[in-house]
Length: 245
Image 1 (spheres, rainbow, N blue to C red):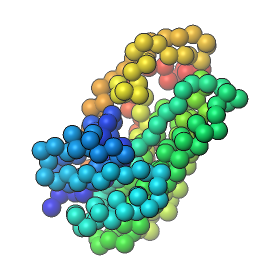
Image 2 (image 1 turned 90 degrees about the vertical axis):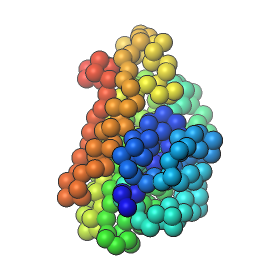
Image 3 (image 1 turned 180 degrees about the vertical axis):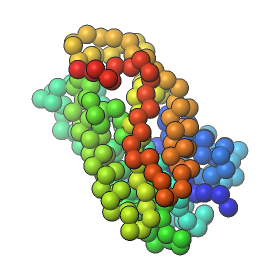
Image 4 (image 1 turned 30 degrees about the vertical axis):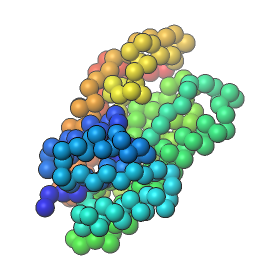
């Protein structure tokens, strides 16, 4: 049997593109996401795809999903900890507490719960070990205007990545982070029409095909556990990151 992977947020965007890349490369994949219909669409035609509708912010749901994947495939080699959401741009004093909590619950608590379940499985299985790949963002380094909830969670993902890299060493668990800039998913569509810049202007930004992210995650996943991509930045070449702000 080939490697076993789990992808969260697998029904749309980068999750869907990466799931298809894993399946095409011969992986068995557990597809996690809130809505079953998009997950079924991505899994269609692939016998080694297991659809598990899951709210990653729900601890019991995450644990149950990982148990289903383990029951079906027997072990777990790779997790792409990808599920996330954004929020409308606004300064902190205009940001509803509910918006903050929603973004934190999905982007940070959800990532913690998924990493926790993955770590538990990888530590307990034989042979021991595996790889967790967290979806960071350019915003883990440089914020966009009015992005307090999203940017804060992405900085938190970097702390999660670094700590898991340290704590995973005794158990042969590697952890890396892919920081993505302007992949043209539904979330990034506003960039093709113009988004706020640090100088107060509105500008159209360069984008790239999500397939470049998928192939990068596949590369990270394919390394032997003695090697690790700690941080990888994949971005549209001409997007405003170097020099942002």
